[in-house]
Image (cartoon, rainbow, N blue to C red; front, side):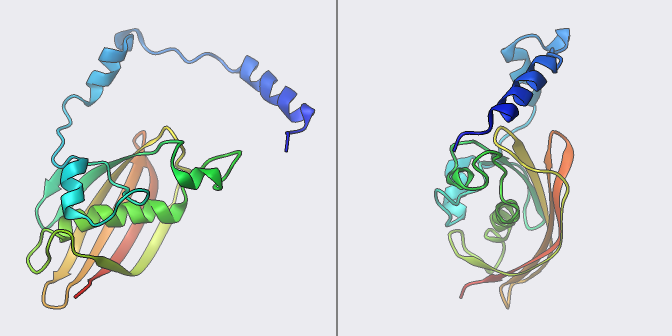
Length: 187
């Protein structure tokens, strides 16, 4: 269905009124802007992540890991793009990354850490056993870069149980935080 003509006029007026966003002179070229991430090293690229996690398209939600402390923590990146299948229905006129997928992305990042710990094997399956203390702070939309961090708080290798916490940011602002995620290693 077509939007009402009045809403199109209001949108066009809002676009005309919006002040153009100008990049600071110091960041005038694509090469200079791209260089802002030059100091961020990739620890695990997507191919390495696929050797650790069993997830595949369309449910592989960690594009790279940029910090990794074995058995303890990781920082990972999810580049949110408009061509992901969830955006055809969530929502057609205002695409927003579903909150449960944000939690899943954090869980997969925790899996990168856990599946390399004693008692677990890369490619094994961790199941969600619980999630507590979730707070969403802002929408995550196509074009955003979700920068996630997870910390493994406990790991009981004998039982295959892990507990982790996590946070994710967009443009340096908190988007979602999870007080505790519990995982069980499939035996």
